[in-house]
View 1 (cartoon, rainbow, N blue to C red):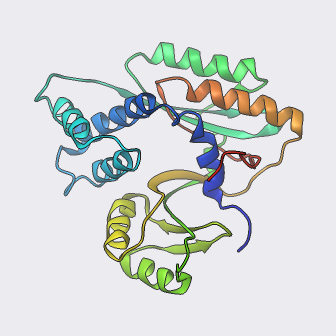
View 2 (tube, rainbow, N blue to C red):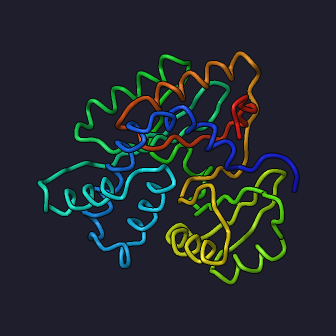
View 3 (cartoon, rainbow, N blue to C red):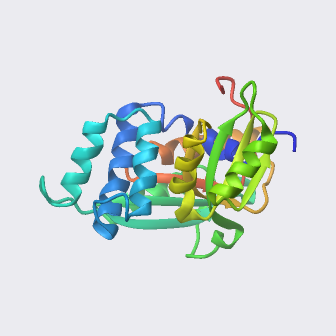
Length: 247
């Protein structure tokens, strides 16, 4: 399969938000805190936590910081409480947008998200208005490097528990069940593959194209949403333009 993968759209969306290491750590630490509260502090029995630890390491967050966050969330270093909330709506051109947040103040977060939609020609909708257009999947992205044997990767991935493998010009996507992504990624790493990213995410069934003017407006909305510490992820169904600084 030629062209850019579906992950390109998510990766591009996250680019500016993840550019600042401190902001990245703030977002991931909140996710870790919630995962520990819900499933305990042992990654061996908490698949979500294991996935987030891998995500933190991929973002070069020191092990000491990760361990401190887990201890804090488990009550050893004090208490932290974040609530998850999800907003759905429409961007310009009828685009579908889902915003996942972790917050200690839902009123503040709702106001900030609504402001971003309103400011750039979008509108918030009711729960379920666009989520039916997406599927949650585990996505492991393996860059195409010299010597990568796609056929062998497919066999290894399926043997590790993946449900599908999709090939693109510059990378290979290994698709898993959402809760299996950390385990499958670990098995692939032991087999010698190096992933660029591995996490559960919402992937749209289909994409829409925007003209240059609407695209510029849409990108500004994404930037405003991602600049909020309360916003963890922004998913959408827009075909994003190529990034000049893409690796």
